[in-house]
Image (tube, rainbow, N blue to C red; front, side, top):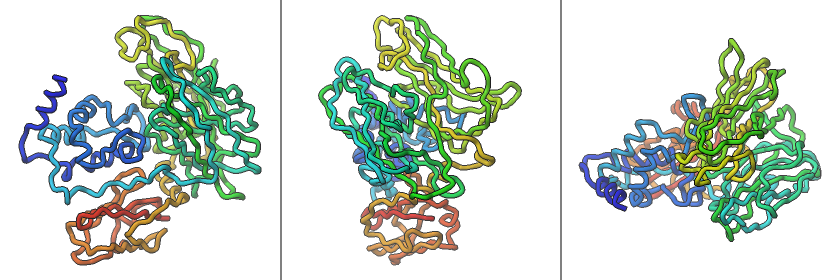
Length: 517
C-alpha cells in the first residue's frame, strides 16, 4: 500500500503543460488496449474514456513500464504478425509522461472519436452454431479440463471459411481448443477433470481461443481462397480449460462457423496441428532444463514445399522461453516465433503478415527452456518437484501448432493481413447508425450524410475492424455531407474491407459501418 500511495502521489505532481488524454494519449489506448478493454469485450473492465482510465493511473503506470500490458509475448524483431498489440518506445514514453504529469484530460471536445466495436460476436451469426451444454466448473485447487463432442447435424459437405469462438463466461474460460471430428468418434468427458485433447488421430485442430483472441478468418476472395472441409456425420470437439478457483461458476461456450457458398471452386484446403511436439520428458526439481522438438521427427527433412499461415507455441507454468523456426544447412533460417519471456496466461495463434514458404529439404525445430526452481514465481510447487509431460497445468507440455497447406508458386508474396481485411466484406454486421452512407457497399466513390451540420473542428475518423485509424477527415463549415472519391487519394488507396466511421460532431458520438469492395 505504501508503494501504491507513493506512485499515486508521484502521478498527481507535474506541469500543467503536459500531454493530455484528448491530445495524445486516447488514440494510443484505442490502438493498443481497447480491442479487449471495451464494454462487452474480453477484458473485465473498459479503458475507452478518461473517466475509466484515470482512476487506474498507478496500475497503468506499472503495467506499461513492466511490459505486462498490452499483452504481446512475441519478439517483433523476429517475425511480423497481424494484430500486433505491442507498445512502441514512443507510445510508452507518451503514456508515462502523461501519467507523471497528472493524467490530465485536456479538452473533452477534442478527444478523438473512439473505435467502433460490435457486441457479442465479431462476424455475426454465421451459418452454423455449435454450443456446449451449460457446465459448472469443478476447478477448486486444480484446473478443470473437460471435453465436449457436439454433433454438427450437417447433411452435406461444406467448406469452412471462418470460425469464431464465443465464451459463455469470459471470466472462467482460460482457453478453448476447437477440433473437427469428421466421424463423431470422440466422446464427451467431463468426469475426471483431465481431458485436454482428442483421443483419435483423425480429429484435427481448427482453431483456439484465449482472452483477447480474434476469430480465425481465412482469405476468401481472389486471388487466395482458403478453407477447411466439413461433412455430414461430423462433430465439433471442444477442449475446455477452466482455472482453479472457478468452482461453481457456469459456462456454455459456442462456436460460430461461416461457410463458403455451395458449389464454390478453387478453395485450397488448410491443416492445423502440433507439427513440433515432445511428449517424452521430465524436468528435474531445482534445475533449468532445455527441450527440443523436430519435424519430421527422428531424422529426415520435409519432402515437399509447404506454406505456413500461423504459429501457436504452447507450454505451462515452468516455461521460460520458446522459439520455433525452419532451417537447412547453408540456407537462410525461416523464422516462425521467438518468445523470450513466456507467459502462460497469454497464448494465441499468431498469424503471419505474409505467408511463410518452407521449401523441401528444410527441417522444423523448436527450442524451449523451463525453470523448475524456487526462483520461478510461477512454479506451482514449493519446494519444486520433478515435473513430467501431462495435461494438467501443474504438468508440462512442449508443443508448437501451425496452420499450413501445400505450397503454390507466389504464396510467399501474399499479404495475409490485406487479404483477410478484404474478405471481411463477406460478413455484414448489424448497423443502425444515424449516419447515411451511399453507395454502401462501395467500390470507389462514397458520400457520408450526417444528421448535423459540420464544422472544421469536428473529428471524423475512419477505423478498420481492428481499431486502427486509417483516415482522418476535416469537414468544411456548415456542410452536412462529405464526399470521398478520386480527389481523396488516401481513401482510394485503402484496400477493400470493412471500416467504421467514428465521428465526434457537436459533442455527439456517431458511427457507421462501411464496406469497400
